[in-house]
Image (cartoon, rainbow, N blue to C red; front, side):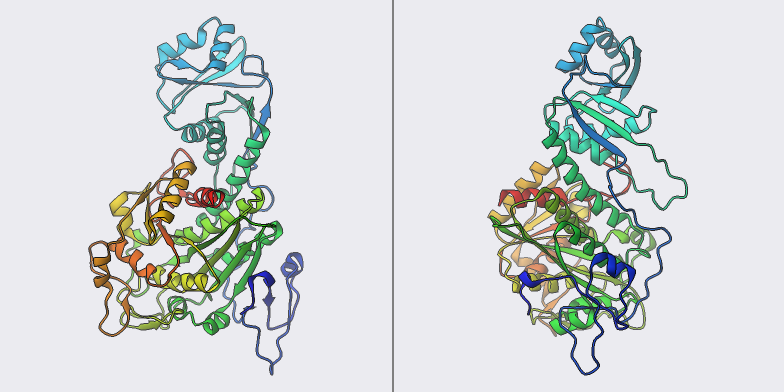
Length: 525
């Protein structure tokens, strides 16, 4: 098998034609000889069922909706069409106090009369120009997000925003809260908003922009409809990261089969859209550590023959949120120039019903050599991850962080805002938990109860892919742990990966959960 150091993104097409896209991406186009065996780690377009996009994918800067700028003048002296003053429990911050002094106490009087709560606002027209009093909450990141959303509803193109103690959290919140996914609408609001932050270092704002770029990328992938984001299309989006210096390689069914990923291929075989296995490597000079990432990449999950009800299927375009988080983290890491080597592995496919789809009762041979009896075709993610995890370990992973929208049981246990954290090694789990806390993403440690391993025993194979109705999230984590020996953290992000309604840091839809945690984990290594 080729060493990762020799990776290159290679597309091989049967026709040997150099397409415009290939020319733009600098891809190698090779006509395979009938007599020669094709290279193992190449991408063969053996068949193509991709429907042309109804709209072109967005290009250029993704943060065009809002721009952050550092300025030296304070809130009282600065000039802007609108000034934003924070208020909490009737109190103003120092810069707000200075502006209030110039206004002879008018802000404090208005605040006393209005009694603002967190997220509420009051617009005043004063001799110093329009002033927006805004209720500050307990979390500076969420306060920033709610402020950005409030400002988008106003007509001001620019605002001078009083900084908070955690200026970085505020900046990140302003960017994340302003996100929207509306490119598929025929009528789109193109309003741009510039926010000026007095006294905040430009380097801090630049970091917030780069992290937000990664989160936006992940959100866009999750929000993309499944007829547009097929496994092939997801691979194409991954290939875009080459422009940032990320090495990307895409494998097709033939190469996947040669590797022996029987579980992954079984899940994929029901769809006319062929699977893709995506490998990524971000390799800075003299990296201080290495982190291997695995993300679940089901671009659509119907449940297969264990069919989901319609209401459960409605959000299954987001069953690749783990893969999206991995790709978003690679983008942000490359933009930030993190001194850590990242490697990523994504098994991208669809789980559909057809005459070729895998069945309940099938026995599958995984890349690790272990056999699995299928007892539920809707427990497909763990099958694709089993092969991806085994592959990561084969490639020399020292520790693995895996993210997946794996079980509804995790959502039942922890709700829609908290991810379940399972660790085969407590110290590795604690490092990830601490990183998530610093990133502002909620996770909760869960037990890997070994007694539940009995639920996975099969009379005809090494394992079953599901246990009984109890402890489903734990059983799924135990299943994944069967396929690696190195320390593994499994984040079940089924709850927080997709928001069913608008929230402080964004609209309904993909949240990009996990990107910020991955970056904090990498920086702490």
